[in-house]
Image 1 (tube, one colour):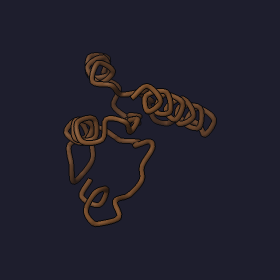
Image 2 (spheres, one colour):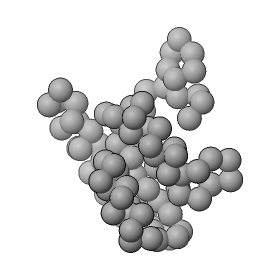
Image 3 (cartoon, one colour):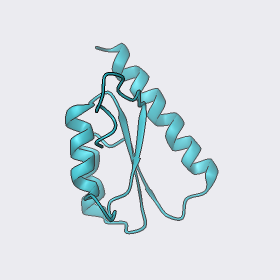
Length: 94
C-alpha cells in the first residue's frame, strides 16, 4: 500500500489480489484503501477464512471477486480476467 503511489513514478496497477487476514495490515482496511484511493483498480479477495456476511459487505464495496483458498490456477486466472474486463468497462465509462 505504501509503495503504490509513493514516488514520482507510481506503480500502474490494474488488479489487486488481497487476503483478509494478513500479518502487517488488516485486509478489510486495505480493500477500503484501494477502493477509496484507486477506484478504477479492481480488487479480488483471496482468503482461507470464508465468511458470507463479510463477502456480501465487500461486494457492496466494489470487490470484483471473492475466492476461497485453495484456489486452482484456472479459477484464479478467470477471476483476474473478469477483473480486467470490469476495470476496462469502468474506465471506458468515465
